[in-house]
Image (cartoon, rainbow over all chains, first blue to last red; front, side, top):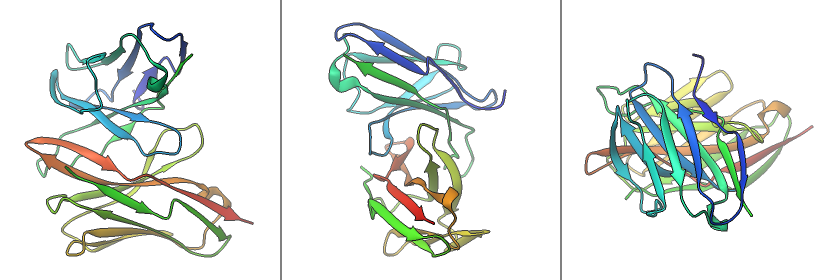
Length: 116
Length: 114
């Protein structure tokens, strides 16, 4: 296990279809984050998990978006009824909780979604 | 919530010169400030970070300074090389009602001209 793994790397879909992305974090990391990045912008926070518990969801995450981390290991991000505005790079990151609070996040290569 | 502003959005410097990128943050409780480098089509990679108990940190040609009073921090790259060309993102660690996350700036596209 050398890093954060995401798949698929690219997904092209038609508007209205559902898509699911998977993230496999670094094995000993207990926190997992999802971010969205559009061209020319910084990553925007979507949601994060500590073990299997989802602790925060951004207002960016509409009810068409759902994320799970059922066993506290890998995570999935599903987008239902995709819209063209969902086209973006979806980045996953993982970290190991520090007593001091702030975590060093390691990012995956991302899953690029194109909605036609 | 936390807001991170980053300037400039693009920066072009001659090889060998220095580059400086600046960020400001709004949440005075933020205590960790990493910088990520992202090359085209690749993942953001951590290049240096600083915690709020220090004012400066250096790693070879890269340094970061933090002014907690003014709530701003900067990335300094000296003796720039062509491989430094990339997009750089600053970020601030924020704690909002117990939830914890990194909030990123908008990015700076750095171009090193040979």
